[in-house]
Amino acid sequence: MTLKGTATQRPTRRMSHVLAKITLALALILGAISGATQILTDLRQEKNAVQYSAEEFLASVAPSAASAAYNFYPPAAEQVVEGLFTQRAIQSVTIFNEGAVMVERSREVEQTLPALGSLVVADPVVLERTLFSPSQFGEAEPIGRISITVDRSVVAPAFVNRMWQYFLFATIKNFFLGLLLIALVYGALARHIIG
Image (cartoon, rainbow, N blue to C red; front, side):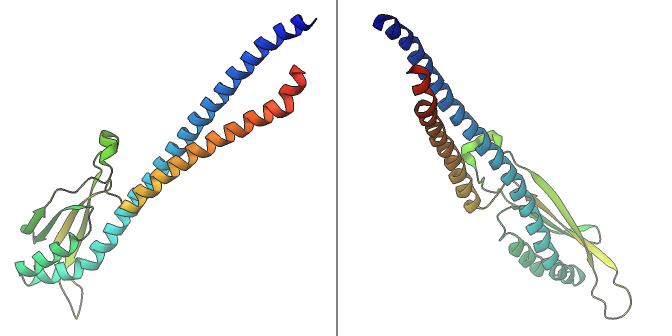
C-alpha cells in the first residue's frame, strides 16, 4: 500500500512542478505584455504632449516672427529660429515673407530612445502659422507664415526613465504574484489533493 501511494505521488509532484513553471512563465509574460501596453499608451500621450507644446511655443513666437517679416529684418528672424530651437523636438523652421523664404534652418534631432532602434521611428509633423502685419487700426493683413517641423518621437528623458521603471516594476510584480499564487496553490490545495 505504501508503494502504491508513493507511485501516485511522483506523477502528481511532477505535474505540480510543471504547473508551477507554467504559472511563473505566464506571470512573466503577462507582466511584460501589460508593461509594454502601458509604455505604448504613455508614448502616444507623450507624443501628443510634445506636439501640443510645440504648437504653444509656435503661438508665443509668432508675434516676433511677424515683426521680423513685416520689417524684413533677417537678424530678428534668426533670433526667432534660435528661440524655437531651444525645444529639442523641433527639426526645422522656415519663415516666409509674402511667399519668399526669409529664413530657413534645419538640424538633426537626437533620438530619445536609441535602444529601441527602428521601433521608435521619426514621427515628423509640420505645423504652420500665418503671420499678420502689426495693425493699430483696422484689420491685420497676412504678410507671411512660419512653418516648423516637429519630431514627435523626441520625448523627455524623464519619460524614458519612467517608462523603463514601470516596465521593470510590472514584470517583477507579476513574477512575485506568480510565486504567491504557487505558494497558495501548494499550501491550500495541493496538500489536500496529495495528502
